[in-house]
Length: 88
Image 1 (cartoon, rainbow, N blue to C red):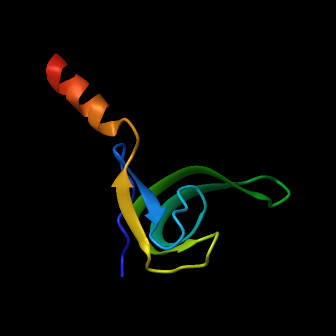
Image 2 (image 1 turned 45 degrees about the vertical axis):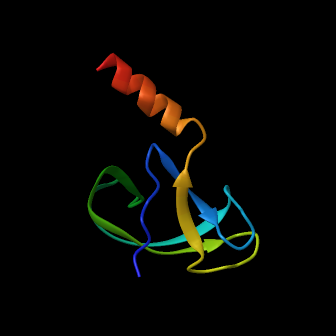
């Protein structure tokens, strides 16, 4: 089951322990990379384009809960949105 990514206005929170800062994230991605090999054959990725990326699971680093992560509002996000709406 894909997990939604946090946005500028949201962040992850563990529903079991309340953790807001430490998570193990398992991702699947398809990328195109420009790899430059030096004369010794050592690779160096100089450009990377992400074609698709899916967060498969998020595990709380504190209590090891899986599938217990929710999106919650970031502190001050509502105030910032209101301020931007006033300017528009």
